[in-house]
Length: 113
Image 1 (cartoon, one colour):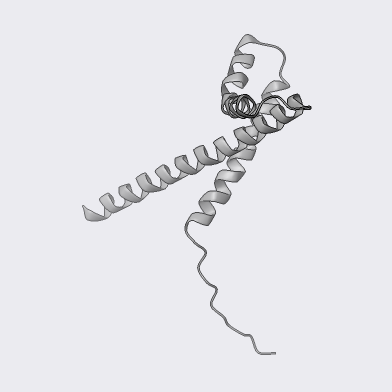
Image 2 (cartoon, one colour):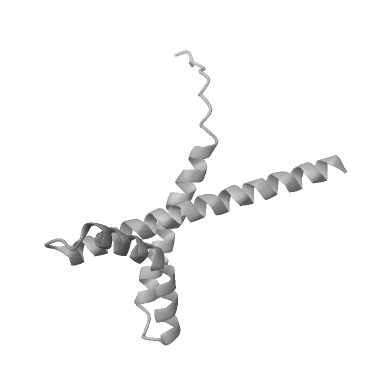
């Protein structure tokens, strides 16, 4: 049987960054949940509260704009989770982009000397 050779189209350069940022955001949320399983500590509570602030702010903004609904507590919780995931996806995307930018500059600087 003859082997058929074909050329695969290049994957867009931003796709791996988005996928990686989604994976890192999921790992961040997993780390927050694992932190909450630790024994009570003032430091643990402050760290997990600080990490989950972005989702809480988004949920509060939504509920103050549209008012409390019948199941407002469930709505608030889902909005907080979605807000945290979106915030950390964007944060990880920016961090990965800055890392690649700095890594690319350092490579070009080494090549020029």
